[in-house]
Length: 79
View (cartoon, rainbow, N blue to C red):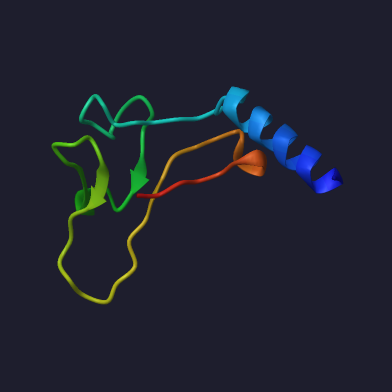
């Protein structure tokens, strides 16, 4: 019974909570608002406004990052 109540409360909390940081790339740009840094020449925003890696198929390390003050309580979701 306790697990059921916890699951119900968790489901309710997750539907009414809001992110502290979100970027849906709807402006088609990741160089401003917010500014992403890293290997920015290897990333692109596609026609569906998804941030994607656009680099040669080689074994290498690529990264992109943006400052966030909410990193301690963050959930990152990738498509």
